[in-house]
Length: 509
Image 1: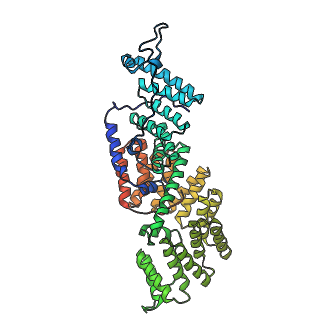
Image 2: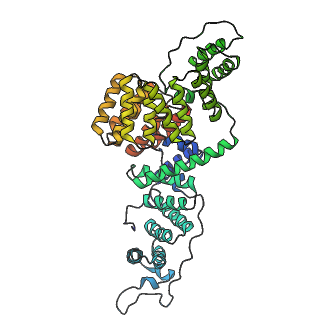
């Protein structure tokens, strides 16, 4: 639909808003795609940027149709002004009220032509209206015509002009985002759709879906680029810890040998390094343990450990080889089945992934990790009821794993069972009062219900509990910006999130 008038921010307004926008611009301009991707994980991007709203360049605007020069003055025969026929010289002689009236009359005519799908004629009329008044709505409406005409470069040019006049004009940003997407300028489209989501309080479902879709495209494209040149190496310690902590701790009695030429010695060394979070040493020791050969009681675990690190390094085939050997030696080694399912998910082989879970349950129907990880697959497949059932079963078998509680609460919330979800989170807060993750994700759901003060309290507590976790900083920054227009605080919180340089356990929120 053609836009209706809205309050306009003009260049003649106080410079404080411009200076605030410049501060945001300076903060966000230097961030690459990974920064934005990180912020969208489980939460929304934060910190509306003048970078989104201010064009770096403008394509040439369309040639304006010259009005008829048959008359430079009013049509006095009927006491009315033929606005379409006036030259610029005549327009400049009009009073501000007359110019405003003329612009409005032409805009309304353009709206009628747009409604009749006469887009080229509507373009000419909106162009005429802009001669009377440079209004962001006129530029945006003309951009809408260009969009239907498939002239996306002109859509971008006109929305750029609109946003110069009103940097927070949501419909103009949204139109520019769509044009960028049509032009396959995905980074620009992602930034604009994100801006729409923030400015509109995440109430624009289409913009949210577009943001998520383009984010996946950008991330997938970048991932493919990285994989082409990537050397297999371990990710950060926090990332490794996050993956390892998605499993319940294994109960294993380690060998006590001091023979440095034995595989058992290196297996014990690997697990010791694992506990110390010295993952490079753990990887090297696990490789030596497998190479030298462990006692039969430890070799499957050594293969599992090596396979885990090889998987985290990005070598799926090497990881499968290790895990397959571990299962050959110990067909009841449930964790290996679960980890193989993770590899198949990476390879987008969903059927093979679910087969691993079926085999694991057939071997031992009481392993809580099996249900938790299968619940994760159901969740990302949008099978929320199945996911909730698996999370519930995982908790029934072992209620000490906090992430099962968090994921259950989120699944219930997305299913529309808000009251049940809130109860799940309140119980989790009682059971895990020192968990930053529970406070953070509970805060997200409170914010979604517009219980903003409670949400801010949760994010603040999460930051106190884990100062290196970036997510509560980002969530709190978003609310500080949206509710309080506290740009300085929002930027400070974003900077703190980046300073932590910490990967977190990625939940499917």
